[in-house]
Length: 213
Length: 165
Image (cartoon, rainbow over all chains, first blue to last red; front, side, top):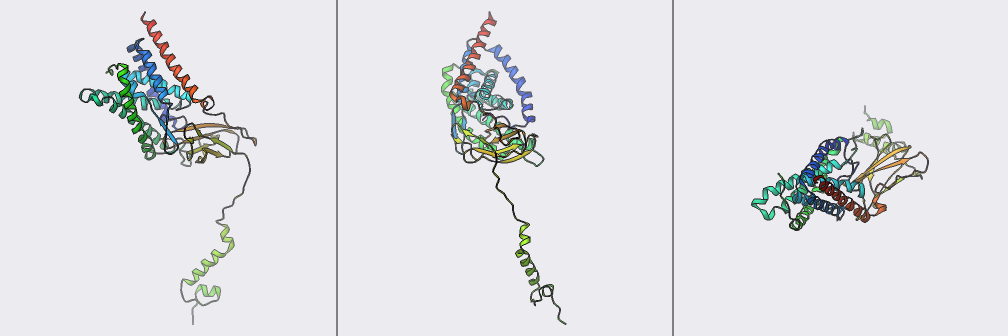
C-alpha cells in the first residue's frame, strides 16, 4: 500500500513532511516517557513482526500484489503514538533495505497508515470495547486498514492535478481517484479482515495494555 | 436558350441533376493521386540503440501493461509515454545526453522511478539496478531489517534501563 518515490508531487510530500516530522518527534517523546525496559523489547518484537508481515506478498489479479501491514496490532498492543513511531521505522526499513516504498513518500505513507489508520483503530477500539467487546479488535483493525488505503488512494488520485507539463501530461502518478479508489481500497477490504483476525489471535498472548487517552 | 451547369461546361457532358457536378468534382479529387499524398503517413525503419528498462516482479512474473513516462534531461517535459510490454519492459530512444528519468506506475499505486544516464555516444549505459534487493535477495534483506529493528529496540531498552539508574 505504501507509495514509492517518483509518484508524488513535491508539494504533497513536503506538506506531509511538515505534519509527519513533528508528529514523529512527539511520538518518540511519548515512547521514551511511557514505555519501560520491559515493554520496549515487546514493542521491538511486534515492530519486527509488522516488518516481516509486509514482506509477504499476496498476488492479485492483474499482475500486482498486496501485503499485510501489522499496524493495527501495534496500536491495540501499545497505543497510538508508540505504534506510529514503530511503524514509521518499519516504513524506513522497507524503503532502505527492501526498496519497497520511498524516502520522499515516507511521510505520506506514515500519515496515511500511522496517523489516519492508527486514529481509526484507536478510536474504534475505544468506542466498541464497552458495548461490543467481541468486535473491539477485528472491526477497528479492519476499519483502520480500509481508512489508510482510502487515504493513500486519495493522495495518489490527486497527483494528476498537482503536476502537469506544458502538454497537459501528468508529471507524477497518472491515474485519478476514479481509478485509485476501487483498485486500492478494494483489496484492502480483504486484507483488513485478515489483519483483524490476526490481531484477534495474537493480542491475548501479548497481555494488551489499554490504549492511552 | 439552354443553360448549362458548371459541370456540363467543365466536362462537356450534359447533366440532369444539380448534384452531379459536385459529385464528379469530388470523385476526381479522390482519384487524383497528388491529393492522397496529403494524408500519407511516412515511415522509415531505423536500427539503433534504445534504452530498455525491465520491470520483473518478484512474485507475479513481470509488471506488464503498466503506464510509464519518460522525462527528458530538462526534467519537466514528458518525452515519451506508453505501457510496459508483456515482459514488463519499457523502451524509449533518447535523443540527447543527460540524466533521463523514467517513472512507471500501476493503477494500484505500485511503481518505480529510474534514473538513466545517457552519455551522448551510440552506446547508452543503463542505470544501476534501482532495487538493490533484486541482487541481494529478499530473504537476507528481510532478515537484516528484522535484525535492525530488534537491535534498535534492544538499544532503546538498555538506554531506558540506564536512564532509570
